[in-house]
Length: 170
Image (cartoon, rainbow, N blue to C red):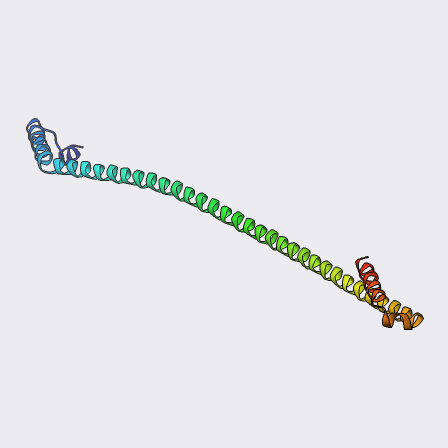
């Protein structure tokens, strides 16, 4: 059993423990100055970079939200303009149709009025012609009846003309 105790790789002795502690603290101090400080500065730099990236991402997200709201507003405005244009086009179409109907109605009334006037003129001309023919027929009949008296008497021709004029007026 003695062999086992003598073969132990670490035998704590007070001198070895003190030198181990001195070397450990010296190593720790040197590492603190040369390694821990740059590592901590690197970690701090990385932490700052990550925080600035997060801030930039948040800012970009806010800008995207603003752009989205602006786009929605522009889209709404475009929809309103399109609706206004369509309503304007419909109103213009309705106005053009109403105007065309009014013009057609006015033209039809004018044509009907002209036709009535023409019919009235033709009627008056036909009546005058009929009265003239009736007067001539009456004159011929009267001439045949009183053939010899009309040839020489001027007063009877004037009387016939007067009667024809009266008939034309009626």
